[in-house]
Amino acid sequence: MEGDFVSYDLVVIGSGPGGYVASIRAAQLGMKVLCVEKEASFGGTCLNVGCIPSKALLESSDHFFKIKNEWKEHGINASEVTLGFDVMQARKNKIVTQLTGGIRMLLKKNKVESKTGTACINKDKSVTITSGNSKETVQAKNIIIATGSVPTSLPHLPIDQKTILDSTGALALQSIPEKFVVVGGGAIGLEMGSVYARLGSQVTVIEATDRIIPTMDADLSRGLMSALQKQGMKFKLDTKIKELTLVPSIPRLRSGTTLLGDPERSRRVEVIYETAGKEEKMEAEAVLISIGRKPNTEGLGCEEAGIQKDAKGFIVVDDHYQTSLPNIYAIGDVIGGAMLAHKASEEGVALVETLSGHAGHVNYFAIPSVVYTNPEVASVGFDEEELKAKGVQYKKSKFPFAANGRALSMGFKEGFVKMLADVKTDRLLGVHILAPHASDLIAEMVLALEYSASTEDVARTIHAHPTLSEALKEGALGLGSGTIHS
Image 1: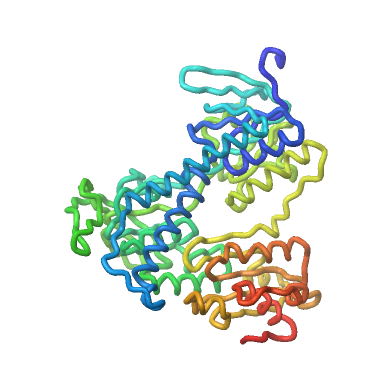
Image 2: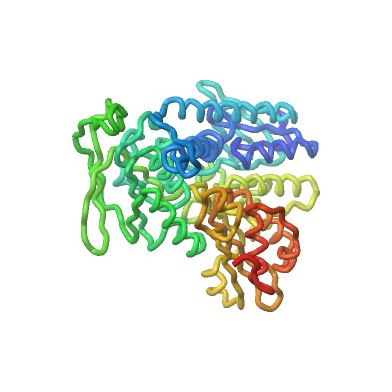
């Protein structure tokens, strides 16, 4: 049978951060690789409708917000500031196009063959690729499923991408809604909510649990919510959505000549929710449903081929990412765990290195998580609640950025570095940062956890002055002989 088909050492299904990185690394290790992508543009959710476009809008909206609200403190008076949202969107699209095109170039440079089409795994472990009316079947010694995830939706909250949106629709709005409701207080919802809040929307976040970013340290949750409230965002915690109803609407004018709300939009959304045992309602031009993501396995042929899934639809794998079938593997969002692009990339590298006879490994304890609001939130290792639940004897310190010279020169007076360490060994167990550029600061702490550093190791490391990173040194000092600047 194998002789009837074109054969590869490895077929990778999906070209997101897991798939394309695995493909490139496998080719570098001498494999003949085919990467299959069902969308016209390579790069997966992250590059097309996730990490990259959201960060482009976050950056643009942050500039606008600072000009309007913070420049005066620096002695800069900017009058008649206008917003070209279409230009902002065009810039975002240009960045996406540049990076997705770059993925194809990287694949070609590393001699990875790529095909566009929908891949389906057959019972004989061949892969059929369908593109339009054409079909092609290929054989592979090994197959990697790297198809990622898609936004979770609810049956009673239909997504129309005009007024009721998922993250993809929120990135593609052509005008700024006057009132914007975010259902879900996780990273995606907060990031998109903060974009539109900075641009003038009245943003309300509805979260079913008792705090935002509920999977992160509680101090981060409280600190971030306080910061976002000061920027005008509103929060309804312990609140559940009951119903969304479309109602007639008339476009509204705001700020003189600036039209907020699509002039072609003929409907608004009535949001009915339950809080403190009472049913209440509000109206909005747009509602973002951001309640998580689910594995993207539709059309893969998993059931027909006999690939096992768990109750939530995630593909079941062993410690080496092998599915229930030999020589078929899965990585990234499709197997669950932290749904992060860098986690998928590391799994892809570890897997293909193992297949090539090397010692591939992922340290899940040292995978950072980031929320790209302003201030940013970054975290690695255990949070305090987890240590308490495990019965670990720990010590903690919390150093405020209000005592950091670089932070004050930037106009940042809130936020902190929180460090957790083992009482007996002084080994660093977790670091949680609320600050500008927290996403960059966390890298040093990831390295520290990767090499099982003690807090004394961090405290004895020289940090340039004046920098935000000095707060990391101070946090470590706080777990030893004591901080210098607080």
